[in-house]
View: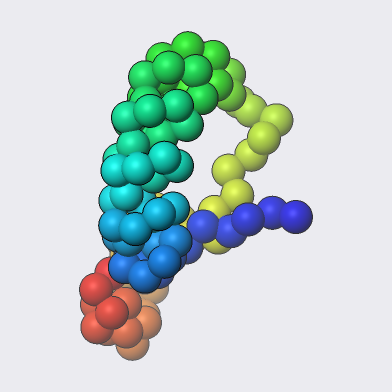
Length: 107
C-alpha cells in the first residue's frame, strides 16, 4: 500500500498532524515526534533520524537519503506537486476558481 502525502495532513493541528504538538505529531518533542532529538526523531542525528547524514538518513546525499538527487528505485509518491509549481501551473492555465479555493484554505 502506498501512503499518500497531502498538504492538509501536514498542516493538520489535530492528532497525527504535522502541526500537532501531542504524541506522534510533527511538533511533538517526545519519542517519535518531528521535533524529537532522540532515536527515530526528526531532529535525531544518529542512524534512522531525520538529521542523520549517514546511509538512509534525512541529511544523507547518497541513494536512499533525504538529500539524494539521483535516480531512485523508490520513486516519489506524493499525490501533490510542490506548492509553488502547482500554483504557477494553475495560473498559467487561468484556473482562477481552483486558485481561489486553495487560497481560501491557506495554501
